Image (cartoon, rainbow, N blue to C red; front, side):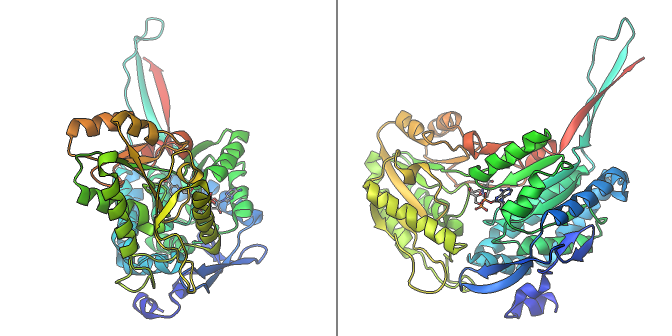
Length: 496
Ligand code: NAD
């Protein structure tokens, strides 16, 4: 089957070697022969049976990655050569972008437009951006006063950190896989990646493209599997040098504990409960449109989702009404229908989680002003939901729901807005809507988050560092910070 046929087919997942793992440049069944089911959440039908890696497979993948890093052709390749391979990968992704987007939609139940215009182009841009860095990872020369009277030459080299173990979530799997693999491979590391069990298909397809691009075997390995089995085997593996994790704080904590054992480097990209602050002078049309996107994009299953909308009291009723109208106007349904603007949640578990939080909000005294229930049809569809009368101390304001659920809360003074914005354990992103330039920058300087959008929700770009403070994580991906995260600086001093 070719890509065009796959795009038309009833079973496009046939292009992916679902029942095999990609280890040491070979597609192979899991050592114990196990598989797990991947469901199309918009239909509740089986999409694929995917090979389930266990400890033996993770071991084999780490061995392959280690051998290639220590002494394979990869270890001798120049940065320019690594960059060329990454550019080739970006071209192949571009060739198959429609397919990648469709696969993501089938696996996640999200409208096809979203991966088509955002995730897949961002993933491609990320690979290209880091391809450009591959031959520009330089050291420094540092003037020093000398050594017992003799002059010295001190310089640094930035070396790849080694074998990177990557564990990714299900919400934007292709994009996050590229956020991890592109800097690591650009810097000369090797990688073993475990995608989330809900959505491993695009990562497996990326492995096919990596193979086609001509990367040496063992440079990039994919071991789909259950978190507690394959994920835990990877995070506990003694021969991994760095763990790069994106997911929930609960699992992030386990990863960090595992990393402590062998002093592995660790990068954690965790959740969020991001505020969107609307000042009295904001352009309300733009603010409401941006807040609705921040709430409902990808069914709200976004780490940077702007779930707490803080509005100056003078505009509160207007914003509540307009956001409710925006929620009511969302067309839910078949994610492959181009007129659909919201699809299903990723799983039954996620649907139950979101419904449970909505019930908790009602019990706590908040008022549902739009949505609040699932659709009565197959698939895990949940209506976009807006809460009024909510309080920042409620569980729905403090805990990450990871669904299309937003709270609108009033404030009187800017200081109060900042206090509310900072009043959760998270610190990933914040958005500020105002025409007052100095107020915007003043608030931006006081919110404890990794990224601030002014008059625009969570702009992401491979050139901009991404990551959180507090419980939202440790470390930064993307930008030059993405290269620093997978390299170590060695200092060399010659006494002349
Ligand atoms: P999750 O933590 O349940 O799972 C993430 C990954 O960890 C999966 O691959 C899973 O299989 C694996 N895993 C589970 N248990 C494990 C264990 N014991 N040891 C090792 N690995 C294990 O998260 P999720 O539900 O897939 O994703 C949603 C979460 O991810 C949300 O909290 C969201 O905010 C966060 N997220 C953060 C960012 C960011 O950039 N900060 C981006 C996307 C998602």
